[in-house]
Length: 317
Image (cartoon, rainbow, N blue to C red; front, top):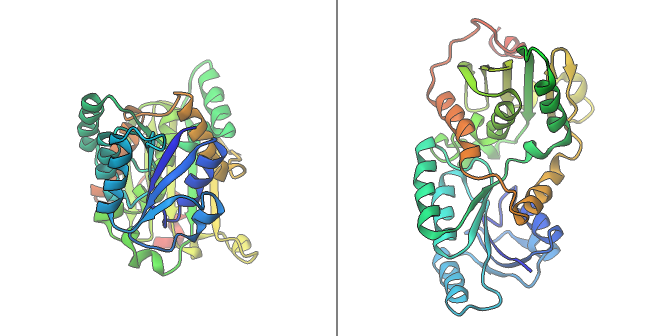
């Protein structure tokens, strides 16, 4: 059995990692979070040791490693705030474990180069959660794009609205220095998916950016993409909002909707299963998406000029 430790046990995404560990046949030996609202652990691994102080967690993991205990940690799952991923990945590898890191891997592309050095020094591997690469509908779309005889450029509209309450902007997620902003925090795996399906990026334009929504245009080898990301409930289409729906995901390619809502929450388990088979996504698979969001974060918005997303009209007009 593979033994796991989890950093960020009280976070929003932590239950998906606990479930993935359990469904992959692993055991959670230890978990850490400065917040002690972690009762969800009882649903998966009630015997796991839990720490609210990193120093005690570090000592516990180190002891298991030095004693060659049968509970020694093989994998450290990192689900902490985005700006801490780099540090916690380094901790994992220096503790003699491989890392499994939630998206985004890091906030800036140069951090990837530093992590490559740690991999070489320790001989351990960094795996990442790029779950959309495993979604059947996305895989089918990639096959469809690659099968085109002329490999034409497709016209794509990507819309993702994950409405959040007032708490969001008061948490670390609302601090661009810690989360990287909306495009990084809720959009990075979509940018990875676009690169995965449509090839090399050729142009990156931002039309609008605020602390609750952002929109722009990306051009790839085989696609022209208008994108819109938001955490504002008012951006969910009215008909859906009236039914109580708070999330809206849509990818339209050449006028056809790509259905990818079903199975979205199960992809962490699939990711873990592939990682345990040695088929995880490593550092370089993340580079293009991290470069993309870093550029978006530092770019001056152009407004309603050029090929902008249709949802943007309701925001700016």
